[in-house]
Image (cartoon, rainbow, N blue to C red; front, side):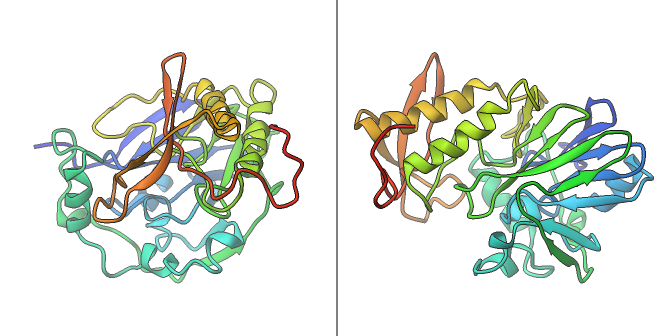
Length: 297
């Protein structure tokens, strides 16, 4: 019998990582006046209860991107903050946030693919808790600030690619960047050229040691692992070099099965390794933007 409750870890002062049964991470940050929640998970727990056990302050819930493992429990909350592009024009938004139509069958499927691990986590049907609140959706853009009081500021930044309106959040208190899926090893873009994506990656890289010292992604504890270590900055460096190699025509590519939907066509990915760090970002739709001077960023 495995664990049936999310694991809660304090990764900095008044800063908690909540691992939802091996599928994803959510985060709760508490300031002197307000608290802040990053992402709303999948649906295998009463996440609102966890949040309100951790903090008694009023809080805001912000979503990095509208994939089901990051926004699945939005209906437990009165209001969420998200980029407009994650909702408008997203024909799967209602499916990903549906109160109905969610069952243990999905967890069983992803578990069979080693996303989540029955040896560690064993959820049951009665744990499902998607919520039933008619949630207000508030659109935010890069530069939006959440003031937690006492000088603790959380700022939203835009890094699309994994999804059209993906946001990451940099917290001045913990000096952590909460990046969702925008700089994971398989981060990538299907919506703009490789040259543009390099520029976005340069932006988050330029903030390292200036605005943040650690990166926590949406999947730090994953596939049965129980560690809660920060992602190394060299993953971002390797992603940048992978796209630069692709622009030079030097990158290896391969068709890789989609890890959570193997019935779908495989994804054409860049396969790139530097100093033992391997990344597999999807191949972008173009090398350069139309009319762009072809100088590698």
